[in-house]
Figure 1 (tube, rainbow, N blue to C red):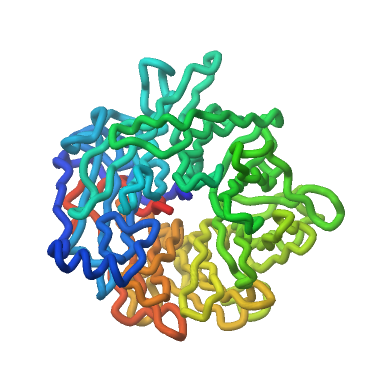
Figure 2 (figure 1 turned 30 degrees about the vertical axis):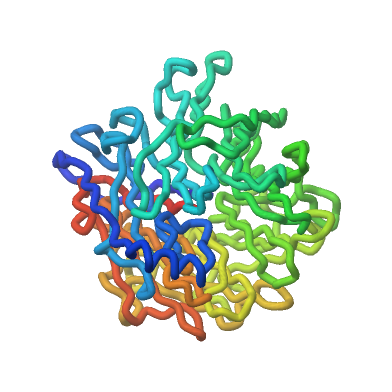
Length: 499
């Protein structure tokens, strides 16, 4: 699942040209790696196979070798002590072994995903380049690449798919919010699912060879409602062992006509999409961000959708003011839309108050932060104002339980929270993106937060530890262009994370 936003802030006068640094991650010896592999299962986002989840963070607006919005992706590796800035890599299209070349407006890393595409036991990083011009598809036809995982971390790269000419419209394959990976036919191999031309899903079926080629064929699933996709995620909503795909979108130019669509995975691929309907039989309002996870621990992935704010036409929509979270339970028959529940900042126990422009739920991530077996939800609130500062931003962590998502025990973090590095400032947009992942393999997910407006839109990322009581600000840290050795100006680091 890929995340992305736009932000405000002061512009810097000019970008300074630097070459993208590639810093090899620290890895275990062969004997240590063997021992680790025998005792620790490898997470889906473990690029070097040491049993610890790794973090990939996007900066698609970054300048690379003087090319504005060429983009890069930075990777931090997990360890027994969690994510470590000493083990990092930065990839762009000017990195040796990565196909293509950094060009203005390519927006490399506009969408990111992770999975083991070549079935070698190491997670691979899938990168969307929505602004790429290709021979086959023309201007802005888009491009999807993979950077391969291995014992030494990520290295080498191959092409997976290029956008195709679609009657003159821009395909923008691999663009913002339009990419996910999952086993949608149940054959044990990861498949690539990407939006092409706004209105169709293009499925490239695995397994993939190390050259990026596949013999699995392709499937195209069209939607004739003229949609504009906002986010995609893959997971097992109906518990049959085959990944399904869920998308949130709006229809054509009707920006307030949000909806949620569900494509069931089967041995023959994805079924035709169906709208997720509520108890009244009408389609549920969707949002801009979604993730899947088992919030109530019943064995089915639930659909968690974040919606930034309400609209004038939302008079009959439950609590959209200031943004909200909707949870649609999964079940044997698929999404149980009639059982949807909603939370916003006016819900009991949720920190803050619902105010127009807060954008509560602008980005959501789902995982278990306290090790109790229930998936929890991190919700970005990048529009949050406090102490006379506008759009400083915050993140709220909501708890899962047997009855679903609740405000009871919710936590809130910002740059004004004791122990959190930095200072809350106008237009920081802290909470623009969120990512929960278990980088130290203790059974509890840590929290990564992107603030794309930090330092005049340079952007930065914060990392929070987890405990049996949940997320803590103690020993939290931040990193940005200075740590990565990249161009800071208008990079908007933290625009999204790989899922």
